[in-house]
Image (tube, rainbow, N blue to C red; front, side, top):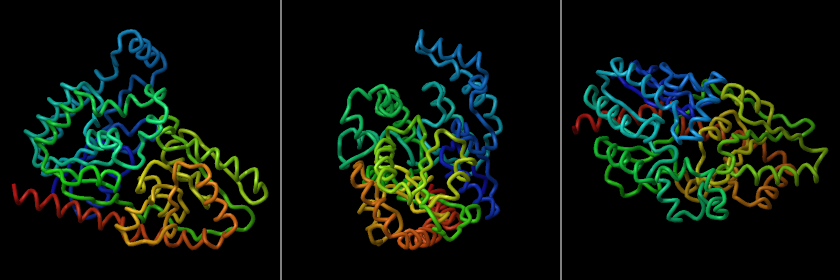
Length: 384
């Protein structure tokens, strides 16, 4: 089959592409690379104007005065020029509803063209979108990425890019896509739960992890326990970084001779995954029930990850608490306590490390997940 993958911001589509190519499918991946993360794509639609200091300054000033983002014009132009190359694909999959990051009307026009000149269209729910944000906004989950906003409405400015998903305009884009897609997949429980019962929902397909690109090394704890926390300043408020930072202050104060702590900020993907190689423990996020892509890759490398590992996830995979990953709650004392437990029981770190790698091999292997996608795509094509 010929498959067109549109969008990338976690390496999900890259791993899926690698699995598809390995199984002799023809794949094209287009996207922006997701800013500083710089994920590889075949055609990059990111605005080059933002890479030139003078133009970036002008774009920012223009936006401040007129509330109009000039870089959207460049994105639209790039997509328009690219459109003739995006035809005759059997399957097209979008990684998100608003992945193009350009004008609403242009996005509708572009997707209409994609539908006209290709086969079946599918959608992923693996990040903020209309359904997941609406579900969180209605306070249906016991906590979510909107919890900091509910606790402190002064954060509204920081949440504008999340809350826009439930705006009237984005709802129109959501409605258009759901009228035209064959179906939508969820990548983990955080997106699975809001989609349950929806007509176009095809089920949860776990994130594909290319385990051959992530070497597992048995953890050796000789002197200190190395703890790593990589901060994405743009998303730190919804990841709960402040809870981790305070917990690390507590741990550093109590066990200065037992731990070595490293905190980084806004590093590209390739540098990020190499920086934590010497770490034993990774602090990922608190406002999730399941693991995101960064956590899964760290687990594949045998790290003990503080992330979403709630009871819903434990039940789905039939696991014991703290056996594969550490469930991190938005609670400094809970995180501090869990860190302390591991520091005082280093054998547990080694045990969880091995179990984490085995779990990724069992449940997230990219070839296994690729086959799940192909099975669903093919089934829907045949039904169509």
